[in-house]
Image 1 (cartoon, helix red, strand yellow):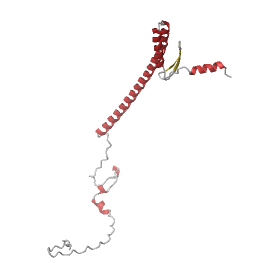
Image 2 (spheres, helix red, strand yellow):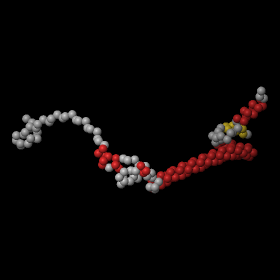
Image 3 (cartoon, one colour):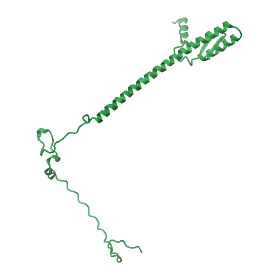
Image 4 (tube, one colour):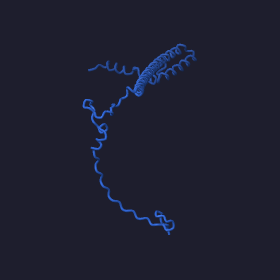
Length: 190
């Protein structure tokens, strides 16, 4: 069973700033004239206003007290802003490093590609065959093809017989045109 003391300590720990976003966090400040609630900037403005009012009423002690409260929240705010700026700069540095690495990799890829395209020795070469030899020897490792066998190979290989076409209908004989004597002239429309 837990004691009530440990429970209250745990509860109090939850209200402490955890290094999160202090700039927009709402605080309850217990000052000399009661509670002031708001973000650090709002609390600073409120304490500065109270310090001016105390100074106008010739209460130097209260004015100094309000200024010290305002200074406390000013330090909190500036520290939080410094941390935010440091995180932002670190992220920007990491982003620049990542971009520089990507740029280097892209440049290397482009250089390799350009070198591969520019250097014909690096490009894949086709096999060169000597077609001047009458026949390929078994030692050469080449296979005989119709190209290197010559014309006799094409004679041996017969083309498949073509399928006969169906006969066409005969064309109608053109009628002669009496005036011109032209057999191919079209008939005049009546």
